[in-house]
Image 1 (tube, one colour):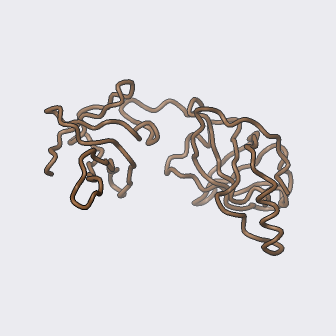
Image 2 (cartoon, helix red, strand yellow):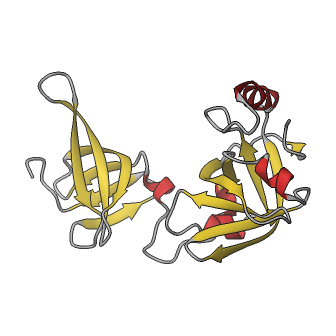
Length: 203
């Protein structure tokens, strides 16, 4: 069955920020798996928008029941959040309309979206990963190094994964990785959709 929530149109600026893992306890709380190590948006948004998982939810009473539940839930749902908190090494939350374990279990696997406009303001010199995706990267000499396709956390630092317009032998795009640190990044111009770096094409 579909989770006991109201349907709602997904906001135009909605960003996927995590997934619901499973029920937590017996009073409707559930575990959340954030996509980011700093999930501030989960805590700041008053409501989350949910979409069904990419695959059928893990069956509880046989494959047919699980497939039927998945097919019955296709449209976005709005989840009014009552409380979100850190618990040990995970994030747990409770919401209006999700009052017991069964209701929480019906959310298992749901993809969580919030509007980008609900993200808290980033500190000076800090950026949300989602805002860096697609930015053009050029070096000090104005050489186009490509676009930011992804970001990768290596622990001590974050790497910009850049896909260049030039095509290498074999028809595959050229991929570069540049540490997102002050030693190599001169500036980020979000309105201009550009990152300037101290980096050469042959590095």
